[in-house]
Amino acid sequence: MSENATNPAVMETRAEGTGRILLFRGALDATAAARLWPEALRAARGAGPLRLDLSGVTQLDTAGAVLLLRLEAVAGRAEWQGLPPGPLQALLDRTREALAKPVPRPPAPLPFLGRVGEAVWNQGRQALTRIAFLGEALVAGFGTLRHPWRLRGSEVLRHLDEAGLRAFGLTALLGFLIGLILAFQSSIPMRQFGAEIFIPNLVGISLLRELGPLMAAVILAGRTGSAYAAELGTMTVNEEIDALRIMGIDPIAWLVLPRLLAAMLVMPVLSLLMDLSGLLGMTTVMMTLGFPPIAVIHQLQAWVRLKDLIGGLAKAAAFGLAIGLVGCRAGLSAGRGPRAVGDAATSAVVGGIVSIVVLDGIFAVLFFRLGW
Image: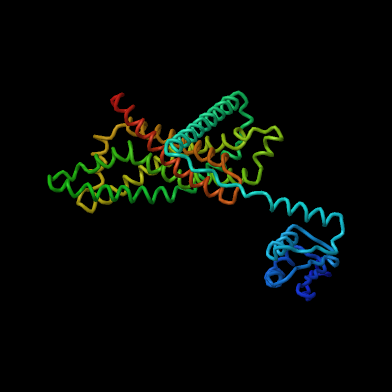
């Protein structure tokens, strides 16, 4: 058994003339100091001089030294007795010096212009970090093209399964509901003009060109982007990323590239599944309105073009790349505290959704200029 367990600290109070003596015996460590603190303070507040007898102290740590110095401060003046010169005296002197140092004041708040400048500076540094990460990913990607055996195929297949196959059910359900809702909402104004037959044109084009890739990207950002950030964030917190760098392994090529490739490959498939399930939901509504499926198919064949589908799938691949980059960067740049992984996952979801909306706007302008 340890000395603390066999010799716990005790305190005795003795009167001496007009003063009092506090006699300590045993190991005066943090546990003993916490236990004796209230009783010792009450004894030190009495009238008359105070003497601290430490002849029976066998062990002293910082918490015990703080208790003794606190008793001296409460009494105003204390006489020390029984503390031999050596490690215990040195510890007490170091603690006294540390407590005598002035407490640093918090920095004064910056003025308004200073806060604006600080925010701009932080945003600029974050932008440079994003650009640097993109450059590292490009360099690692070109290096993998020259040496394809560096890409771990098993990791790519694993991420394809997690990001794609396991998301099929949710994607199909949301796509069906989106098509159902769009058809129902479109039928209300169309019915006023007797143009319900044109609902498949509206829903089909909007799904293939816009809503299919966008909704599939939101699903990927919520499921896979956050998972990427959480996995890599956990590895960063556990210092596994640092260990890979020490061993000479590039974490970008080892961890990021398989995730980026999986996200790019799976997004067009999810977008296509979203389109098909949305068209199925729209067809269900059209059947309830009295239109047979063959009429819906004819409308789609007359108005929906192959370029609409190709454009949507190209957008989906770009969305997948953006979500993968944002999720991996959020994980690799995670902090070291207990909230680091949660903050990284939140940053990945928010950043992924913002990036796909920005990319969607860029594609909208580009398609408009190209006449698509």
